[in-house]
Image (cartoon, rainbow, N blue to C red; front, side, top):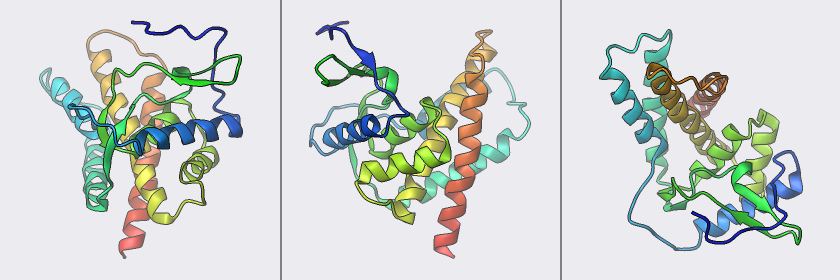
Length: 209
């Protein structure tokens, strides 16, 4: 449904530091707005939902899947202990949903997945769906905090990247089980889930030890 048409718009450039900084400023504006809605959206729980749908079809016979699922549960325990505030999040926050018009105004569209959640879900989505490399991901996290991110902030946000990848990886497996190909995105989601589960878990365990 279109409530307002944005004329002569283009998508935000996820490789442009100035534009990414504006996007992160917008994300913080939403997160700190105090606005609330009735529904919640959690990438880890949504991933568990797709896992349950897969199990209805039989055992999940994907090499390394169960070890990866155990890592995701462990990282989830760490992030829960962080006590991050719950706020309004968009949850599909990446360049295709950010429109810049001819006057330079930035608009955020497609609020289908919005809900109350951990703020870092929007950062995780942006990193995964924009296919940012690790250096660009670290820069984005620091831009969000408007300062060099701390180890605690990095480990928490790395977990969000992992959960975004994990959720959509499971969604991809489910779609594939239904005979619907998602193409290379299955592997993209898998790579981000695996890489950032490793990075986040390593940081959490290092800080605790």
